[in-house]
Amino acid sequence: MTGSAPGPRPAHPQLLRPRRGVERTTSTELFFDLVYVFTITQLSHYLSEHLDWPGVGRTAVLLGMVWLVWIYTVWMGNWLRPDRAPVRATLLVVTLGSLLLAAALPTAFGGDGLLFAGAYAAVQIGRTVFAMWAIRGQPYVSDSFRQCVVWISATGVLALVGGLVDTPAREVIWIGVIAVDALGLATGFPVPGLGRSTPERWKVEGGHLAERCQAFVLIALGESILITGGTLTQHLDRVSVSAFLLAFAGSVALWWVYFDRAEDVMRTLADAGERAGRLSRLVFNYLHPVMVGGIVVTAVGDERLLHSPGEPVGWADALVVLGGPALFLAGHATYQTVLGYAGVAGRVAATLLLLALIPGTVALATPTAVTAGAALLVTAAVIVADRVSERRASQSRGPRSPLR
Image: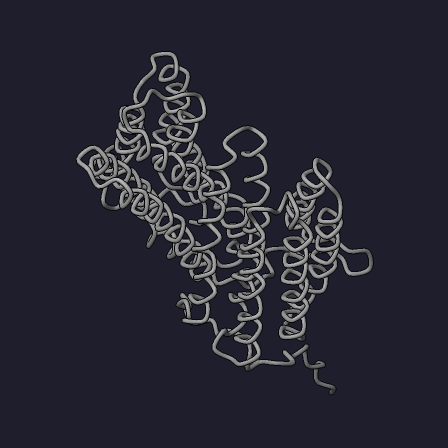
């Protein structure tokens, strides 16, 4: 009687992360994250200096491409061990590439477009090819990387084409890079002859991905505090200190909304089983950049607040002071919906209220500080509503998770 043929075995098992519950973030991953403190600062400064509709659109494109580099590197770290020399070396090279990307960011739509695109393409393609080699032989996941490398290579080349042409063609092509990547991820990176990848087979450790994205949100919030602190040092008087305290309270409110259930999210995704891949794809690749974008816009609003707290808001000021928290809460409402947690209605209502306040504050020539205070009160109301809802809920009932 002939035994069954052995299944495929990983070619480099020593590089693969073990699955022992939530895998904690390593020092190599944290070192990689340090570059993104600088990157988020670059994005905020770019938006602050180009606070018009073309500037907003370009900032969104730059954030989208930066996020793709970061999140795909995080996914690689979800499968591979960053403490192993080949993986660590790759992460350090990606860190260097990310630094070049950030350095070219302010003039990405000017003279440094090719540098920005070249850094993007080199990091995306090089990292994915390495991961395909490192994961070779791992059931299902290795097939996914073979399919992924085709799409990532195509978008990398497309990014380079965008770097070679002038605006507005560059904007259109780079939007195409983000759109093609989103389409590929949503459809499983289909490739003729290779099929497509299904997220149920990705063997994701969802708790690790949740912890990594929480770290990026902290980076974005920290950048907001850096901006306000740096602005405060230029004008240390009673009015500036009061404006700083208001801006700081706004950052605390966003932090509270996001991190109040951070541990629950980690447990939910860690226990998601085969659904972890599908859920992680949605909440981390698609929804988190929306929330990060909201924090970046809010940081610009905080800078405006410290520069001119008593000046009446114009449209640009109102859009960043009120629109930043609105964008964050809209992203978080969708995040809560996907994970099955309560409090979605309050976040939607707060988002709509913040947007409705924009034309009113402009029409009434409301001072910037009063407008920022209104944004803080609306965000704080979401926190209070969450507290009240938790107290009323039965202790025996957990979050309304679709995973149960």
